[in-house]
Image (cartoon, rainbow, N blue to C red; front, side, top):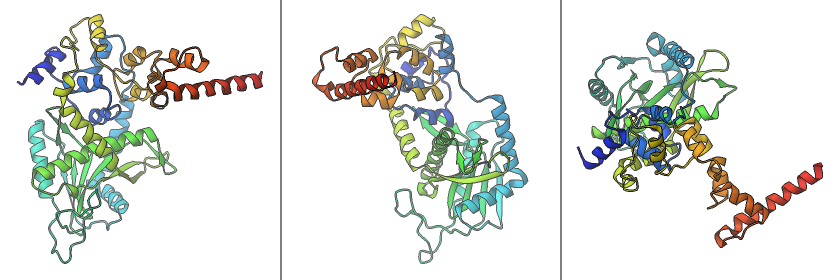
Length: 388
């Protein structure tokens, strides 16, 4: 065990690290500037348990009803060996529906390592066959270049149900399970995500759509690393994910394409940051602990030693958000990132009000923000006066 691993184990209190999954990895991208969250997630701390211990239990999570509904919709879409799903995916990708397609269920088996190895072997074996150079079309990569491997777009399709992929997060292997991977459709691999939230009149809930895009990007990244590890071009994995949801208020499935290039960059950047935990730990006090056996006062004092970067949207993705919100009371960060960024280095709401009222001297670096605040205060006073 390295010194960093020992330090992280000490922070956890010696309990086993909590395993990440695609949802938690996607959530890491929600507030990449938060040192507190990076350290806790890097150490594998059980944040829901920690939040309960300090009196701020997490107020979100999937309901049993939502999980049951999602499982039922997924089973419906995958019925009959995925025949309807294959048609939806092929039509959305703009390729002919293959006359021949194989279906492989990789969701069985208790041993995660064996499942990952079996999934890797079968996915690598499903690589599109090479075409003669003269007849080969260009396979575009995500950066607009040409993929190294020339592929046949007319090969029989292969569908892999719940393959188990792997990704390294903060030095630990994380197992990820996409709903489906479609191979040899248009000569590439496509991640297929099945979600039970509806698409009404062609529009889905923006927050749920954004979360699905980031989660799908995690799967794309893991699949690309699998191909690269086997000596193949990772760009054979498309950066367009096929999202299957119910249409309108019925259970009829409809497929959409999600371009996850931006999300891939964000996920990769955050994973690289998590890999540099040694650097993050240098700024963490030696007595910092998230040991669930410690008393609440000790845990609160310890957390307060590591800076957080609270924003209101943390409430949807971080189990410690209610604690951080309480801690940030009276700070401009609690008003949201746009307000914090517009106010520059002014961190206190009391200071903002004083500058708006002209009750305090203005530092040179605060002059622009102070002028805007005074103008806003005059406009507010005028509006209130006009309505009186």
